[in-house]
Image 1 (cartoon, rainbow, N blue to C red):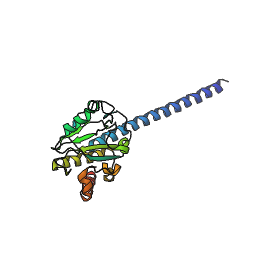
Image 2 (cartoon, rainbow, N blue to C red):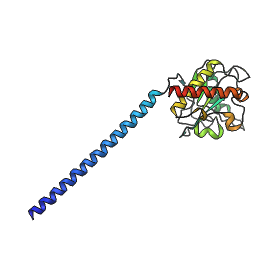
Image 3 (tube, rainbow, N blue to C red):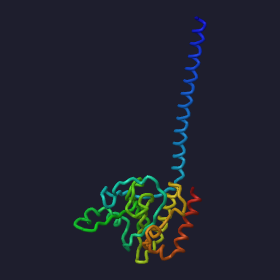
Length: 220
């Protein structure tokens, strides 16, 4: 009887030992997985191109920053302000002041953009990238929007604005694993002539996308 109890205890000890080892292995694998994932994120972050921008977030409100979540980014939409000669801060402030300017109006204006690029190439972020902006109609829920300032009625961006737009789009493409084909115009969503110059000059738009793809591949 004693011998039988001895073997029974030995089996129990072995089982506990094996269970303990299994738990240890599972914990170790979990830690390795977390460490690896963290490293992957850090490595991806390190590969992002450097870009200079100023953060001036809109105050939360129902007309320009409703704080609705943007869960998945599937594209980038390029716009023009349609306000010749105005700069990034002017357009940012227009979005921010919509609650006041909408007072007493029967037809309310809903508008905003994640970024506004100024005439000197300055980039202002207006909406967090985890929230939607009111810019691209049916694509608000899965795109990042960029408004670009322009000096005159043609809607053509000057060199500083154009260069900043390229840098920002490449940054967003790399960050969200997008390709040039995921970069679209407001026109491609609704048929609105926005950004005007790129709608009226299709070859220039295609050239812009080609530059984006080349820069994206070179910097990825």
